[in-house]
Image (cartoon, rainbow, N blue to C red; front, side):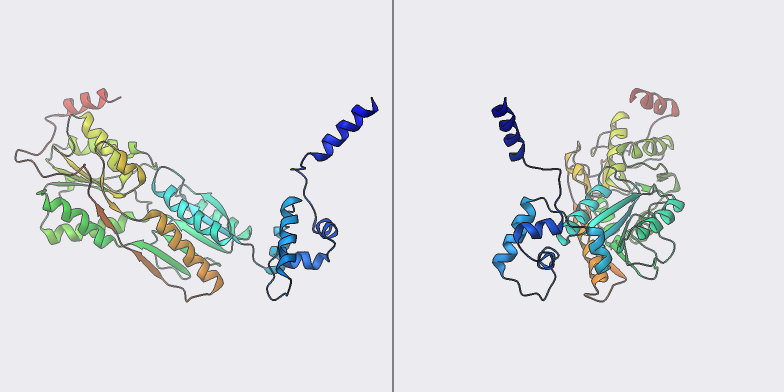
Amino acid sequence: MKDTASSKKREQSTKPQTHQTTSLKQLAEHLGLNPATVSVVLNEVPGRSIPQATRDRIKAAAKLMNYQPNLLARSLRSRRTLTIGILVPELGEGYHTQVMRGIGDQLIQAGYFYLTAHHRHKPNLIEDYTRMLIGRGAQGLIAIDTRLEHPVSIPVVAIAGHRHIGGVTNVLLDHARAAELALGHLYALGHRKIAFMRGQPFSSDSDERWKNLVVVADRLGLEIKPELVVSLDRDMTSPELGYPVVQQLLATKEPFTAIVAFNDISAMGSIRALKDFNLRVPEDVSVIGFDDIRAAAFTLPRLTTINQPLEEIGRVATQSLLNRIHNTIPPRDEITVEPELIIRESTGPVKADAPPCLDDGLELQRAGQSSR
């Protein structure tokens, strides 16, 4: 019995203590070093002459003994929390997720932690979450597709921000160039009767994108008919966003040969709706999106779109914020990102015969019912 008991005891003692942490004092005692020396190495305090062999031994022992530094105590001493707050409407399909990936990659590389608050475009939540993130020690904020109304007490970078607020750096797509690329492409294909989707009123890009489309359309001599302008009003980030507005367009019986969607998600919903109404893309109607999210290359047909490098935008915005926090370079009011036309399968030459429209509301209703 004694041999069995002692054997079990030996087995238990050899198991790694994965859930136990080691204090700085215990680590120093194990190494036979002064706790101050161990602290200097693990906290990477500059200007201290400690042999590299000793540094390597301390770091190896810290990893082996599961030493976890007290980040709160470290931040109180240095007055640096290494924490960034992120304001985002929600993490849906496409745009926000890809921007967040770029932000996350850059912050991880810089050794920063981040807190994310989803505000659903509600002004009261934007205000409340901003205060809460600052209260939790955020050294800076990144606001994605968020309408900021007031200056903030810490550095802020706004992705798709268009309001000039003190202390805020705006990272913007060149919407004038994006409009030229989108409408110029359709114009070159012979399209003159074009339908437009305006973005949701709460989207920070909506007004700027529409304003530039109107300017370019006028320059090209394209008439924008009120009947062929529809507005997205649903707060969602899935393709169904674009489905009902195509129903609206077809119900007007106003002919059109192309749709400029507000973004890729609404363009995908448009393609589905057109298909349900027995209209072919691009043979009957061409569709162009904005953003170039990853799914755009996998729709059927594959989506022609205006690319904005979403992950790169996230990285650029993050580096700009870190530069402001560390005062490495003077802050900029605005950083502009260049768009690119990505031609795939959803756009094509206009047909010689009449553009599509439904004959009557009954046919529209039947087509809508058959899609459910």
